[in-house]
Image 1 (spheres, rainbow, N blue to C red):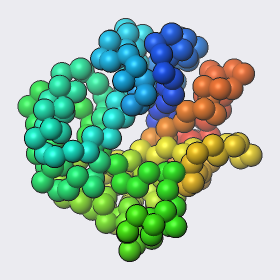
Image 2: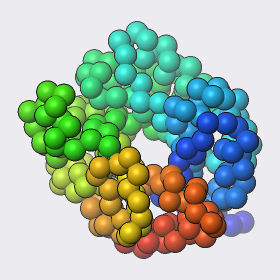
Image 3: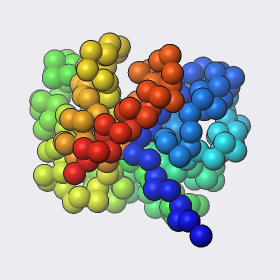
Image 4: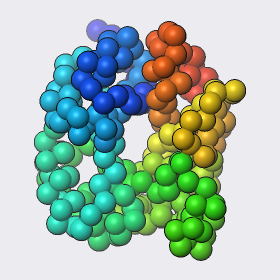
Length: 238
């Protein structure tokens, strides 16, 4: 009997606003090559039904809703999310340690295996943006501070730019996961991102998973582009 294929380290973002486009992309790709991310836009458009349909195609799902609210509201939401059978989800670390601790405890009541991540600083923000909204630290220091809070709150890891993955791995246990969006090939348009990195450099910085959206989903041959990103990342992982 052959063993199950190892889980891909690439997560493809379904940056769509309707079910047809999302399922079309999912059918062009391969669950052996990637996992899929369902974000706020698609989830608001389709609701939980899109999760069932993507699961039926044998994909593991990262539900990226970045929950950030008072503890009671987050608890009720994370309880419902836990019943959807997803692989990974996230909450925002700016909600504080108490909210994060309570959320991970609540999630374990309904699903023990779902990975819970804390969002640190969005990859669309830079040092100037942080100063504008009142942070005293630069991006690197603020991400490390929030990552440490996530670790203390017993989360499985964080969402951060691959630029900060190196400092996270140097300061926190190796099993603490870094999921890194903002991945681009050399010469790609960075779109609305500020802190981007190639798959190879992300791997060398210690990223555990990369999230890639438009460079794959808008390419002429999404599956082939996915294969290129996957090979470059996984062959350079520590």
